[in-house]
Amino acid sequence: MVKYAVSAPQADLLRELAAVSDAVRIAPGRTQVAWALEQRGLIKRTWRGSGHVAVVTADGRYYLKHGKPPRQVQAEKERLAGDSAQAALAPADGAELVSRLHSASGTITVADPAPRTRGRWRAAYYDALHHGHVPEGHKVRWNGRQRGDCVFTLVNEEAEKAAQPAPVPRIDVPAVLDRPHPLVRATRRAMGRSQGTVDTRGRAGAIPLHVSRPLADRALRIMHALLAEAESRGYTAEPQTDLQRGEAVHTLAIVIRGRAFPLVLTERTTKVPHEPTPKEVRQRERNPWIRLPKYDEEFNGRLALGAPAKGQYQHSYAHSDGARWTLESRLGHLLQDLERIAAEGERRGREQELLEAERRRRWYAAIAQAREQQIDQQLAKVLAEQMRTCFRTQLRRVRARTCSGSDSSRVGPLLLVVLPANCDRTCDRPALTVQGGVGPCQPAHGRAQALAPLAVARLALDACDSHRVVN
Image (cartoon, rainbow, N blue to C red; front, side, top):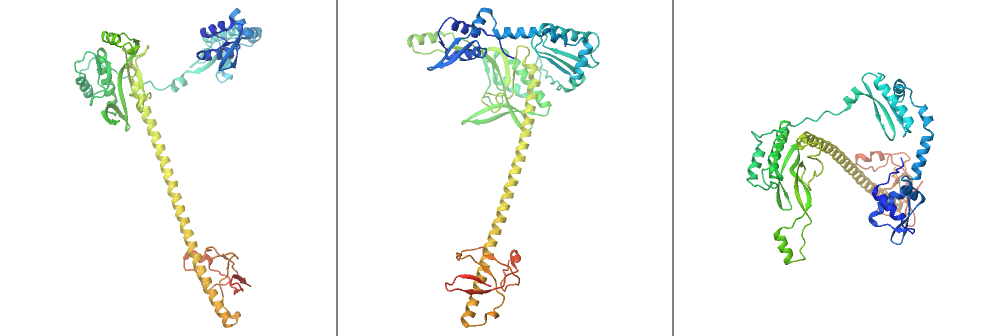
């Protein structure tokens, strides 16, 4: 839907631009206002030099004269022009409206109807409401009675109630503390008889409080109710001490499913103009350059309970007094938030454990595979060395018989090892040509049994003493 409404800052800027015939430079602080006017077609911006300049368009001058942009006027005319035709398509009575809702899976949306069309739909709605056309156990909802889209919904009340979450149990806060919680008693002793601000933050074994003295009793009663309810649900409330930046930090935490959630109860403050004290006035007279604060923080009577500032769970759970509720009525919601965060953390922990287990499994599988590859490579290296040794032995026998003039036909079965022409002594993977027969030299390792069928051929040496195969 196109926005036609113009806010007060936008109208002021539009009047300023219309009062000048030339382009006006837009201040950096009014860039968003100018952008909104440009989106409505009331001004036109362009970049010049180091900033934007703008001029009023014809639509902007029309708005200043009539109070409405021409686009809105034209849209209203078009909407009213088809009002009669759209009104004729509206349901005649409540029964037809309910029938259409059943056919449309329970929801009908009429896009921004004109007054007459809206009136026809309104009449059908009230007819269905007051003449018993709505099925038993259902109700018809209507949104957009005065402006905007009209949305009619047929709601099953039983299904709606079943889909609603269970109500949060309320935690009752006692009016008087007869038997306070041990931590509440320790906090009351830590407070002492101070009549000003009560600040027990950083006190070991006490509840962290930062409130005005009139609200101290209420704060203690709230913490007593919260701690007692947490312990009744099987949780523990215990003071904790952490080391941060070399200093001991004392906190109070509720432990749920092994996760500690620190809590602190404070009173909210409001900024008020600073009033110089007589001492500050005398210091200002002696030193005019001294800077005094502009504002002071004063307690405003609203309590807030949640995670400490700058902590792990900052802004994760926090409730306070509001305009329509008190902190006492939000204690159940606070415990529910803590339980939800603990359950979510436990779920993430299980998922992380599964990921770590899968990562370890892959790591060990990769190590086992690498070990197997290393063993295979070592076996291949040993096998190649054995084959080279066997070949040299056979070669020496052939040389000896060749030099002695023996009949080469009597040379027994020999191992045929085909080496490349550029083979050197470091070649560890000679090629084998198997033509049948069993050679006199076989490696003893069990993994080399696949190479048992060895080739038989006659070997000879050429003039340059290189290796070659003799058929």
